[in-house]
Length: 159
Image (cartoon, rainbow, N blue to C red; front, side, top):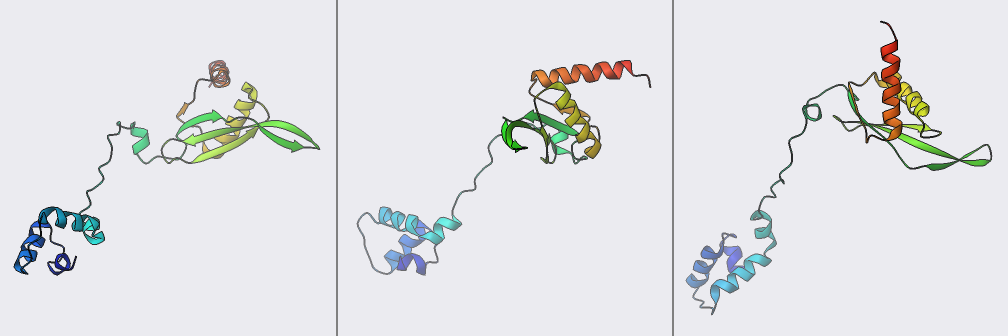
């Protein structure tokens, strides 16, 4: 370690040369120097290999570009929660809206997983953040029914 520090942590060849210049002959010298260099914390830090990022798939454009929050939104229900309301326990659900560009979330508490509860929560959400251009879901019955009802309302409404 002393010879290695004297040659300023240069590596195996330089440490071997310095060791032999000092007049020492060590059997299996290269292996001994390698062992010393692998235990040197300073050398390990400076000779560490860069961690390369793994191959990732190309992201959609809306995930990369800077846009208004919640312009592209994902929506999903969580499992039920038990909430104490008026002295008795009631099941409530959380509806999570996720912004797909800045990863922000908005949570609405709904009493059930019905289409009307979903549409009401969607109305509250759009009142706060505006109407999203795309909404992604896991195609649950509630979301499909809400989409059909919403489309029917839009087709029957004259603008």
